[in-house]
Image (cartoon, rainbow, N blue to C red; front, top):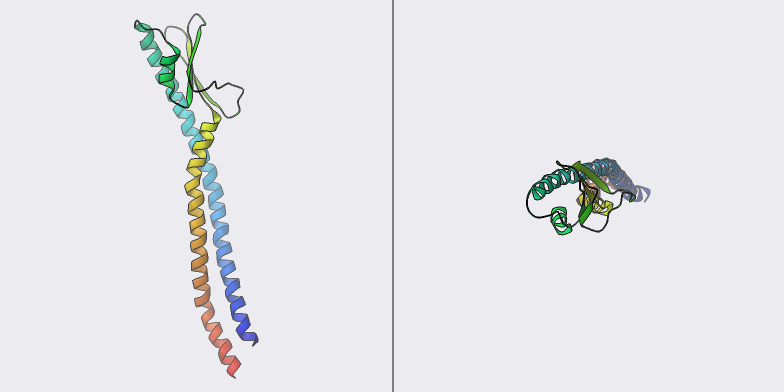
Length: 178
């Protein structure tokens, strides 16, 4: 009787060992990948805000050379849905347009300022929640992949453990007959 009960325990131990090792590797990989992905997304957002500031400075310069003034609606069209563009002209007058007010006091907010030829400065701001949403969106597939791999490891581990335990089961049956 003891050989028959030892085989299922051995199988359970093999499954637990294989799955634990796989999950451990997935966790280490996942943590490293999550940090690198988050840093990559943040860097891309910083670059995007800086490029938006450059483009806004060019657009404002072109607008000032024409007959139409720089208005809040014009700046809102430059800002898009999740950014705010603020222009301070050479005389110190400020005009803003775009998303809700993004202040320099908010942690995690992105800001990029560029000089406007002919005087003045343009600042493009993006709320930190936009960056957080993009990081979360980038990490979701990684988490789902890790879960799928963990389930696959459990299934494969169970099959391998059954196969590896088979000779021991036969040995236990033969010992029981003797």
